[in-house]
Image (cartoon, rainbow, N blue to C red; front, side, top):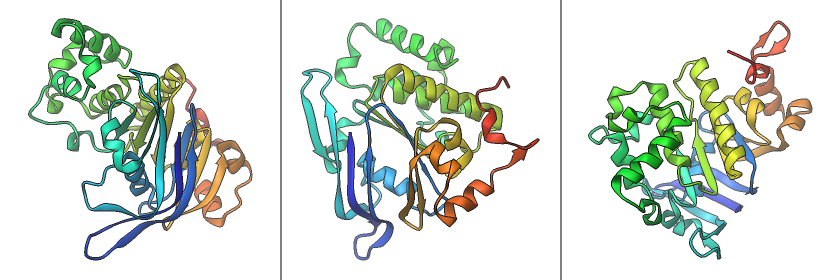
Length: 274
């Protein structure tokens, strides 16, 4: 689906501050891919390049990011560089950023924010019919219909994050990029949102890329894992294999830092009843 070929990404116009250094990887169809690493490792910058968001001075210095998608209207295959991905936002590619209050418009009700982000083809029918479709979809995320009439500040942090996940998944995009989607939430809410995202991916059979500094989160839900350090990929492979046999010292240190409860990794308990 997405091919990242020897890409170097950074910021600046007069100068250039490198954040991602000669990274190559593929995002496959119907998988949950994890990208792990400490703050400053380049993982979020890489996701912005994959999303095609160059609005903050981000630029690709060398290499390329290309995507292959299927047009929902015609069924034709679409191949495009990341510089053209903006045309595919909320249609083929969705993005769940960290910090819901910095993303949701504080002056706009939730329903309008959903509708404004929809591709034209999804706005079919009357306003009442569209609201009904949105409300039914939101109900699957534990969000009552009255959430659509609320402003962001009237919702809890967990509810706002559920709203972002629901918006990202509403049109069944082929790729969802989630950048630290459970940051600043308590562990119970984190668990619920992670399970929700896994269920979405299984139901829609799209690709989910989960960016997190928390290796325990990746252990819980990802199929394949990329570990980044200082802008480079230092380890990559099936998540279970990396945890069973980490090859790089940095990865071993990350795994060793995971908390243990009664001899078990705390990460092992995601699927258990809270």
